[in-house]
Length: 116
Length: 230
Image (cartoon, rainbow over all chains, first blue to last red; front, side, top):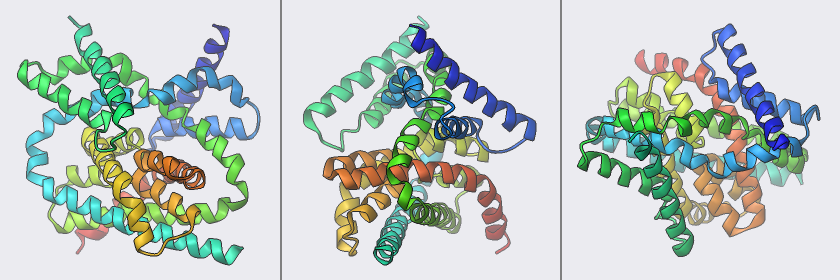
């Protein structure tokens, strides 16, 4: 029980520190991602041990999809807008995905070859 | 009564997850199917989204802590790929620039409004982060997440054959591309294909997510003012 409490405290401390920094600097940067970078820094500098965070991080990561389904259902309020823009959205996202696949794949292949 | 919404979400999701585990068909994505079925139920029962969202607040509130713990897989992969980190960083940065600017450019030319543009821009990050980013740019969080998941489903099916077709044969490069362009679902497929492709896909998934969150809030207003001055 205690290990859950400790890992939850660490996670929330990172989140709220991120929120505080983001708020006081008035940044557009999402504060949860700030929290993630703080936790990453703590792990890399071995201030916090990987195993200590594990009890709460494992279920959170495993059931992450469940956490954003409610927001996803919010599409129900934009059905008209989506119907109107369906072609625009699909076309732009698919083209962007094809280009990104090609660019990332080819650039890394070349850099990797020249390195070895 | 207030519990019905959250019970609906959990039961339907677990059910679809079980079905997918049995069939292993990528097209039967449990997230998408759950969303569609719940929207269908809400429309049929004439319930408001507001009530449903209120009931699901405990789940929604956990999303931010879940984003924080994405640092865990990042840390684990970081130890593993330290030696190649610079190359990976350069490639993923390129990927972030291409995915956001190409999508924005296309959508702008086709005449999308600001709400759509801001929802299309974070198309190359994992859904929870796409949601927070779209929200902070003035887009629709739900739409951004849905786009990411749809691209992920398509990517899981077509990305690997496509990469081979265009001559990307290096396994690390294939993984990196799949993680950068097709997020979690592309990564899940990559893990199935081969452990090396999988490892690089999960690295690029996380690295791209972090890079996009840093780059997009700065890049988006710049690109928008550039596009508008045309």
